[in-house]
Length: 231
Image (tube, rainbow, N blue to C red):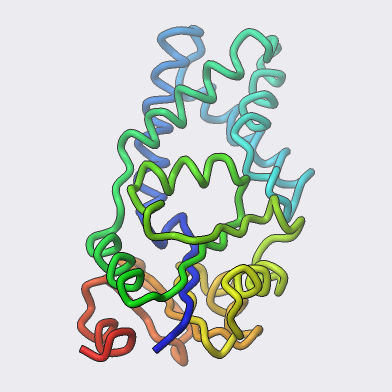
């Protein structure tokens, strides 16, 4: 029985890709209707802005900031960010949060871990504030004891500090912990490299490689119950 389990958030506890796609559709439609910028032009500008931020702030939590991406897109469009940036940030994230749902069985799996006195932490390459909002909206905050973000550590996964800080917070050793994540390089290899048992959550993804790791498509997988609860 593991004493602690660490979860990535985006793509592991809920479907990030579908939520981002739907939120971006809403976001771009709002901009076209309210700012008069044709959707295709804004999408191209926003992609350019995102690439600028990613290149400038590579491997930092700030590289994921929607505020910075929106600000840069507005600047590229010769618009004053002070007129729109906070409003547009809320347009995207409010829609995103309103429509997100946990993966099937995730809530029950975390609840059973909690009922068995297993400590639970998250480990995420993001800024803390929005990740707390996500966990709260997913209704998983009642089960999770700790959060580790790249904003907190100054490094992104697979940096060992991301995983080791989660262990430190849970007060357990690496061989007493399991890790669930969707990215082979950042999550699974990162956890394995510090001695944590990784479970590669792939949902409907056509995973390539990583054949020596346990792949999980659903939190209702009977094998999980056997591994974690002896059922």
